[in-house]
Image 1 (tube, rainbow, N blue to C red):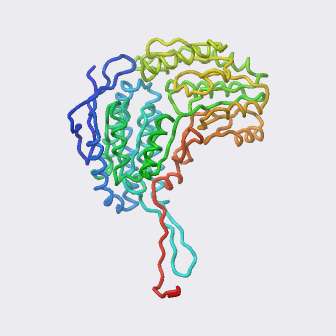
Image 2 (cartoon, one colour):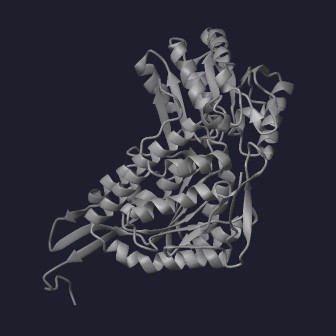
Image 3 (cartoon, helix red, strand yellow):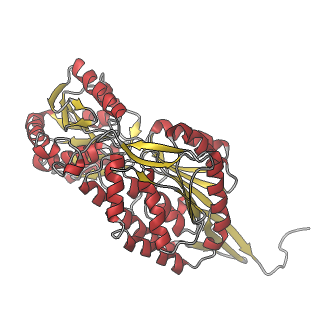
Length: 484
């Protein structure tokens, strides 16, 4: 199979890198070349930001109705582009068909919600004397840095509300999914977005810091949103702060699912399987820890192991269509996951199923009796592994869930809604679900983490604050009320 050939999208044109250089993304299933994309450098980043700056004024002046029409047309066109997204996601990230469908549906929802927000960009009037107004206006050029794990959905989230608010955008595609994210430009072009309003830059891994630095330091760039690891997020935030650029950061998670004694065990098991193994656990909200009360732990673990050992959770090449579990992102990732498993095993963890990688393929893995001495307790897995921690009290469950630096999402399973709500309120997370999986996304709800999981919020009216400037404007008759 020939590698996918892609290009950058700058000022409405498909272009290569100024240097003429390309880089390869390796197919995690086969080890062959999945795609070949321009190896952009600082000069390419500057060209993209310049194009966005030139297009900003015209798009900001476009009527809200027309902006909404473009966004809704883009939402309607996603289904037509499904085969292209499916082909790219399969080879670049090893996506299964359900994960491709999840991305398309969520991308559509982000576009539709952004379109709905266009007419909600309001302000406020203050009482006299004279006229006093709080007004929201487009911020300028917005930089979106999107990850590879949900390449369509999260690329669309990085740009949709920014465009709805009248900003122009530069999307920096992930080095692991350049062909997939370049297709976003095709969707918006077909929807009638003017040239230069959206620009897409690709780069090889060795030039990421150079490209991101050139984009953040560009004078026209006024907003930065980044979704990715806490380690890289700290670097992005520090560099943006140096240039006084506002950031929205969605970073690593370590998401616990708490099972209390009165929980519906079957529902908790189903939520764990979904939350831990969807997209090989490569989701920021993935359930990589279950904190279960000792009274129901044996029953829960037995049922979870039975479910996780099912044939459809044996990892294979997704193009074979045999299971719901594909490869992890790379051999390096597989090695790190193996290290986490072996560290847990050496410190008393019991591997109940899975636990052995074959190249980039790792079956659904359940590790029982996880303790705070293990790396698995504190480090984000980002793979098809779930650790089981047994506790004796509700207070112990809350303390354990809050004991690491991350604070993204959590779930609580209990028949007692008052107790579950109390637990939810005491958890140090940006998101908490009661009797639902940790993996959930609604574009109309505030979405993001606390502590080392980031700050700022995607979703709903929160996005208006992130992607606009709030200004105070006054007007009077001109008669002075001030002493000379």
